[in-house]
Each structure stands twice: as C-alpha cells, then as structure tokens.
Length: 330
Image (cartoon, rainbow, N blue to C red; front, side, top):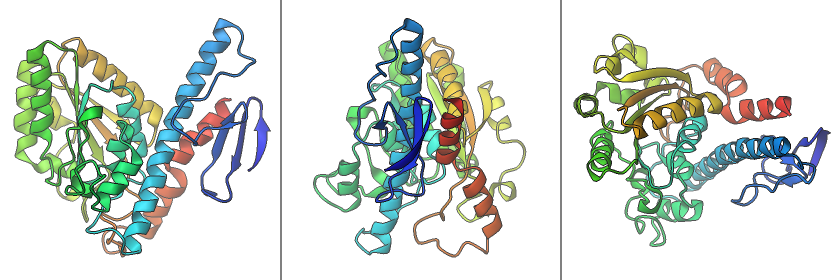
C-alpha cells in the first residue's frame, strides 16, 4: 500500500483492491479490513486524548461501513453482468450515507424495514455480507434460505424485519413494530426506509396518521434519490415533500443525504425523541443513486443526463466526501 502521512492519519490506495477509493489509516492500521474497531493509539494517554481517539474510531467505523456497502454493491453488479445471479437487483451505490448515518443511531434490538433497494440497509444494521451473497445467489445458506433473493432479505437477529418489493409496502410493518414496542413498554424504536416514490402511496399516510395520534416510536426515512424509477420526483409529487408529514403534526427535517454526519445527527435526535415517548419523526434525506433503477437499467440518457450523473459522482459521492473530511479534520 502506498500512502502519505498526515499527522496521525495517512491516506493511500490498495492498488490490488479498490484503487478508486481513499483508504484511511490510523496508527498504521487499515480501517476497512475486518469487522472490529481499531485499537487506540499508544499516544492517547490522557482522558481527553482517549476521548478524541474514541470519536475518531467511530468516524472510521462509519467510513468502513459505507465502503463495505459500496464494495458489496459493486460485486453484486458484477454478478449480474456475469449472469451468475438470478433475477435483478437495485443498487444502493450513492446512498450509503443514509443507511449508515441512520442505523448507527440504533441499537441491535431496534427495528428497521427496508425496500427493493435494501442491501445497504441490511449491511448497515449488521447483516453478514456472506449470508447476503448466498441469498442473492439462491443458496440455502442465505438469510431466507435462498428463497427471498435481493428484494426480500430479512434478519431477525439484527432487527431487520425485511425488505419489501412493494413501493411503500413496509410502512405498515414499521408502524406496527413501533406499536408493539409501545404496548410492551420497551424503549425500542422502528425505522421505516422508503423512497420518494412511496409519497404517492396511501398506506404511508394511514400509517403516519396512526403513528402521530398514538405517538408511536417510529422514524420515517424518505430516501429522495430524485427519481421514481424513470421519472423525476418533481413530475409526480405535488407540493413540498416534508409538508406531507407536517400535515399530521409529525416533526420533519430535510437533510443532505450525502453527508453521513448530518444524517447521523438528525437520526440521533429523532431516535432519542422516540425513546422518550415523543412520537414519530420524518427525515427527508436528499440523495442520488449512481446507477440505474435496477442493474439492467444501463441506457439512462432518456430520463437523466450523463452530465447530471457525473456531477453527483464527482462532487457529491458520500464515501469520498466523508473521506476528504476525515483527512482534513485530522
């Protein structure tokens, strides 16, 4: 690995693996390898220094999680192109900051519900990539014994109640899970991930109405990746996006979904509110999918321009933006 030293940080590339992404190191330990957080620097002797190291390690964990999702999805794309994977997949590349920022604010026993574009949510909540690959390949070792495939992965051990191929279909599941937590007197929360296309589905509004009336501990996370499949959301969704949740008296917040720190800050606030009995929240995360609606959506010029895609990839890539912040901050 080649790299340059930046104080306690260094940045370089693993030329044999992922040359397109910065690889950050702290105390000469690559952060993207393995599943455990790095050890503290030997130089961190004071309490203040140890606190700073712990904070740095947490940010490194965020970066590693986002990169893990990115690499997983790139491999999924290769499996499809190589005709080794049955069916289609909907890649999460470009949206990693939303899943990681949100799920890092949750406990293992908290719930999430996912979407057809759900690999990132699963990994961010703690799913094992090998079991996910097995599921995608139709193998019995997969989370659903190979019968669910890309769009129906669930993992009860990590609180993942499942992905759903129906747009907005998991709104009732997440709201019901939140109701269960409230009735049982636990302080668990539920997070409902959905895309901007779900804002046209009635089930979402029925669920949000109920959640607001009963102050259920649920956070509705709208991943606005700009397109309802092949149509820009501005052509399908009238009025303001957050106004729809505000109509039910639900706390709403619009966030830069490419900034994992901004997503996490909003997530922490909403989760703490829900645990205290403060009711639901609606987080609008403005993001972008770098690939097509699904892996077979190759020629996208008829609904979005190459220039638009390149601007997001070069200027708004959540993995690279966060890596640059880490380097500049340390």
